[in-house]
Image (cartoon, rainbow, N blue to C red; front, side):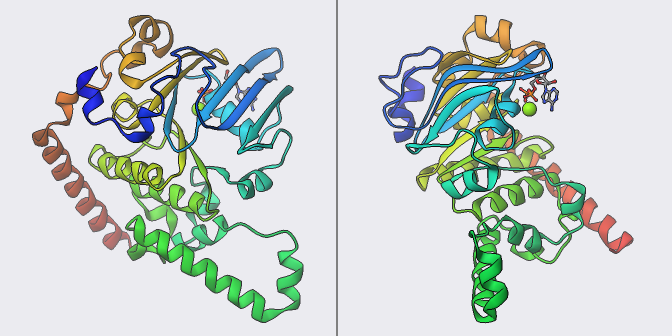
Length: 317
Ligand SMILES: Nc1ncnc2c1ncn2[C@@H]1O[C@H](COP(=O)(O)OP(=O)(O)O)[C@@H](O)[C@H]1O
Ligand SMILES: [Mg+2]
């Protein structure tokens, strides 16, 4: 489509010669997975024959609920173990490697704020995201100057990221007091404490006020433009259409389609078979992103924010 081609990102252009089919080979894959299989009881949650994720691009993983997207994220990042399968990240085999080591290798996934994390401050959440070097506990326990220096470094990094995501004013607030959108930003900022090469976002738009989605989209694009690889799961088809360089469709554990967003998401067979009824009204119609609508959403968000602030003042902490 010529309209798409005019504002195509360099990352999207890298897919020019990639076949539009499941398991397609990419020119510069950062992640390559083969035969990844995970069953719960008798139910096969993930059965991925071959998957390649292009370096430096934004790839969307879409598909109906229960397709196995989250399970695949968990497997690849070491939070769950497959029955069989292998994968390599940046040339290193990571199958069977635990989550902490996967993160240190440069691949991280975001996590929703748990109850426990909600009761901690924003800054402490960020500190928790910092990688612990092997042996660090022993070393730091023995050498206080090293410990202090490391703590100072971590705080400095946390503050820089909080500033980038415009959460610096909230650094001493409880994470639980943040709005839906701010939580998502914190989850992203926390994942970046690892200095990853690749970040995996599971439904980054869930619970985010529509007016804040633009800013969230901007942050995700900025990560890609800084050279990071982004893989995200999302039900919001506007987001998928607007920021993905490539789309992978998963259903019943398998990769069933791949291609550029414009093509995959206008493929009626893909829509009918895999995206389900709740996607039929919203496949990324540009007209919904008109300035007028954006302004209106912005006003609604401001109003909501004001109400929330008034509530906070009333309730105190
Ligand atoms: N820990 C688990 N125990 C049992 N079944 C699970 C578990 N995690 C996921 N499943 C099942 O695996 C399938 C895939 O789930 P999931 O990966 O969460 O899908 P998606 O993220 O695409 O919605 C679903 O049928 C789900 O019920
Ligand atoms: Mg999921």
